[in-house]
Structure formats: C-alpha cells, structure tokens
Image (cartoon, rainbow, N blue to C red; front, side, top):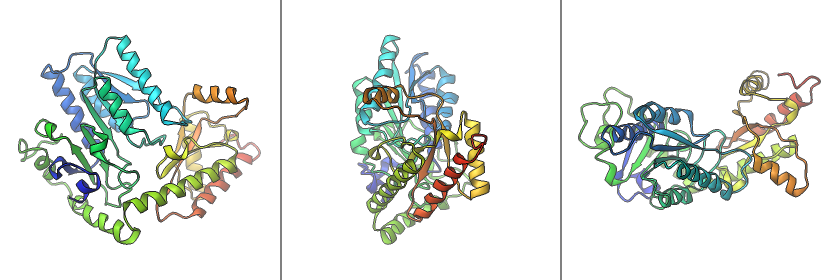
Length: 363
C-alpha cells in the first residue's frame, strides 16, 4: 500500500513486489516471446531500446524477444545532453527509421533514469510520443527512480513501470516493485514458475519457493525511516539533487571540463567529464583508472567511456565560436544523505594529481 500510494497507482492490485528490475524486464520480455509464438506479433517486428539501456535488461530482450523473432531498434543517446528536445529528437529519428523500413514497433523499453551514463529522460513526453507513433506496449525501467525522482504512474501512462527499492529507497537488497496496468495482469507471469502459477501476477510474485522474502517485508520500514528521519521522500530527493549538482559543478570547474547533462536532466547522480590529460581511450583504460582511485586514494566511483563523440556537441561549439577539448570519459557521482562534500573533494584532488603527474597520461 505504501508503494502504491507513493507512485499514485490507481489500485494496489496493480503493484507487485519482486526481487529486482531485471526480473520485471524478464517478465515483459517473456510475454513478448509468447506474442510471437501465438502470432500476435510477426517475425521482424521491432523492439525499441536505448543505446544505453542497462545491459541486463537489454540481454533479457535479446534472450526472449529476439530469439522469438523480434529485431532491435536502438535510440542513440550521447553525452553531453543539454535538453529534453535533444532526447526527443533522437527518438523521432528512430521512429523515422522504422517507418522508412516499413516496420512495426511493438514494444518500447524506456529508461526513466538511465544507469550509465546517467540521464533523467522526459518520460511522460516519451511515452506520449510512443503512443502517437502507434507503439503497442511501453515498459519503463525506472530501476534508479523511486526515492530519486518523482514517479506518477498515472501521468506516465506506461503499460509497465518497475523500480528497485534497494537503490535509493533504503530497502534491503533485493527489493523492487512492478506496476502493471490491470489489462495485462492476467497475461504476465513470473519467469520462475512455482505453486501459484495461474493465480494472478500478484500471487505468483508473492511466492516463488525458498527465496528470501525479508527485503520485501522490510519495504514499509524503509518508507517509515525516510518519513521519520529525513522528512519524507520529496525532502530526500530535493536534498540529494541539489547536493549532487553542487558537487558535479565543483568537479567540472576544478578539472576544466563539463557536466554530462544540465542540472534538470540529472537526479541524485551526475556525469562529470574527466580531464583529457588522463588520456582515457577505452573502457579498459577507465577500469584501470577506477582501480587506481580505489587502491591508492580510497575513492570508489564508476567511470564511463563513450565510444563516439556527440555531433550535437561539436555543432554547439562551432556555432558559439568556442573550441572545447572534450574528453569522452566521465565519472558518475552520486549523492545520498550520508555523503559529505569531503568525499567529492577527495575525488577532485586525486584526479587532479593523476592528470598533472609527469607521464600521468599512462594509467
């Protein structure tokens, strides 16, 4: 009931608790596979994903949907992202590609808050665009969303919406919710078949054999904790967002780089470009830097290497008459209520030291 109220669900019966968003993705992907088997879909119909869709979710649709006959259509998202309009344009380009190929997009898999790189997408507008383009079903992966950004499933209007309760909501690992529109409840099934098969999705998710249910039972305690000790979910979100923007802008200024998104396109996570002096030219270079920061400076931070330069960023620089030496490597910083500015100053100083070292380009 606490989760249903928080996400503005029409009915608590549309919300089920399960272990994680990957399981929710598998449920939807499995249903897509059955749609091909039952001839509701035709071989070659499209599933729309982001280029930066979380790898486990992408693989779920490859394992079920592609094997059954679907083709994947990717929407490319490249940093830096400066506006919702840029995101919408990328989707419109993908829809045009589908039209040019005479293909039908059966399912759109959208992220609310992408994981790596992290960007808050205009989810209400994207779902609306999908509806206008005739997409039959929309699944929103909001794994990082609850406790991090506002969720109103009625306003979003996706067929399925899932979010992990153990990321930003203080529930133990692993806990998650899936909101499923009422008309799909009878058709969707837990991917692990157990005694409650056929009794409805809520019952199927409520009992899957000998798994540990204690994280799910602790969800209401996590909600009570946020209310009592933080002042509520909105207070938590606003505090963390304001703090991460301040720390992200501080790092970008100190390193002479830029943030990967504007402040309104980040949540409690923000991408910050690393100095080009570090000479990170591959994902492997990023892993080596991450290991060095952990081992020698006791700083843990994810590092993202973007294979391509964003052509929009190049055009912006040309139009403004500025020449920006851009790195395609970013750190993803996060801010939770227990973090302090000193945590980010340590990262700032460690990166500056490594970038300014003689021969520091060799990681």
